[in-house]
Picture: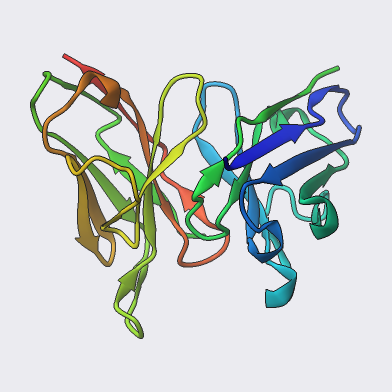
Length: 118
Length: 113
């Protein structure tokens, strides 16, 4: 069974940091291009960024609002995707989804909620 | 960035009736080198993550009922539900993956009339 399970969300103060994880099972993670997509409460979907498979260069791309503050990485030995979020802002409050695809997003986790508030 | 717009914002459809959702991109998302439109459609039900319905603008993902179809090219696209079922009540999003940052439309909410 394919599973993407996010963790690491929570309440954080503006300027703080969080590290999200996404553990994957049921497909070959090392071959997958992975992304993070977020959804603010009651709002639409926003692409955060993507990491290619190492065999395709392992490069990352980010949306402008998070570039320089967020870092996507992967540990293929642990089937795990990461999102390091620094200098968090109130507007980063959202459910963060881990996805597999990297272009169209075929598989989605259930999401983890990040709330940025003082 | 490519801006995606959708219309209508919301749609009330009777059981068994047709629902049509439009999506427009601010610039072409057709790659003339391979004649592919870099557009996907997703369905999101309340409290659930999105689900991929369509990619390459018209290719139905495995397991998606054939009452869902999509068409369009260049900058104008359409998702059609031929005969609305109760389980189709959801918000539908289009997404371009032609150029980064990949962008989503604002969503169209489909309700039962």
